[in-house]
Image 1: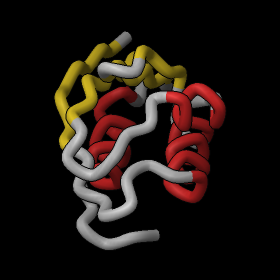
Image 2: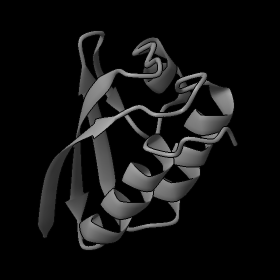
Image 3: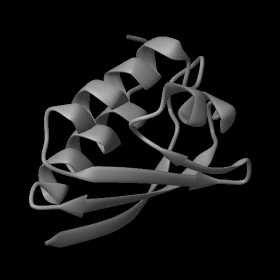
Image 4: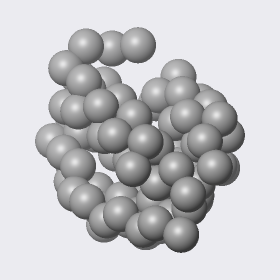
Length: 89
């Protein structure tokens, strides 16, 4: 089982809102991996919309991400690309 830990800076102009959280959930659901986020607001399981939104991640926020599972590298890359995007979904 792979485990990847990385820091991501939220570049999205409106931060992590419902559409972004839904895309994160979709990414995790389509890969054989689990993803946890940790920020000043606490921690969140990326399979839970409420937990993701409760972190209140705004543009410029830093988040520590942990992906575990056989497809951890792929899910880590997809989540990082989403969070570091400079354009809205």
